[in-house]
Length: 290
Image (tube, rainbow, N blue to C red; front, side, top):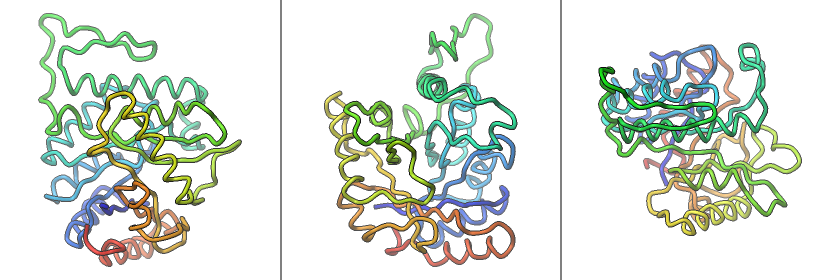
């Protein structure tokens, strides 16, 4: 099990300082979130790349549908090179909220899902092969053409930095398209939905989590993809303020989790909240260094 934490709020300089602090106190990963208008996530991660040498970092999460995938590929590969190969990107549809719809209308879940799939295909294709082309409905990519500018250098992590994908398990459904998507990539962030999504902070129980993990493992094995090295994330909160989980990190590891990510979304913004985040980072991972 590896241990990480999400920084709920910080500017780029503060995030870099927390990443350095996390590295010093035994954490394995530090994550930020993306907004349409706010502190730029990938600039923030670039700042952390310059102040750390071991800890991994990334987004939790990137709403791929609102990016042009070639822009996203440029950002991801640049930060991966800058960090020496320590970037991870968690991808999903993104949760609609006023900070999103203020700038962009809701295109509907189906279109966002199409853009997520196409966006990830374009990102991985561009990072894996400079001559990549793609006949997409939303994001077509033509040939390089004579006289065009050269593409950027490849990322350090080949064929591309790890992509973790939200897998939404739908209770009572025979087919699980969201889990099939997650199985095609490099990691899984488990979500469970019934008629409505779970409220923020509502924990998935160990039994259901384990069942989802085994479903994704079965999909990968059926399609010839290795389970070795595949990451499985549990969103946690040892303080019990935001997510109330049963059991210990070892229990979640037993049902398949490989990353325990502290999600301190209940910490209020401001100097006092930032001091509390620092205190929690300095305390180290819940069961010691990863």
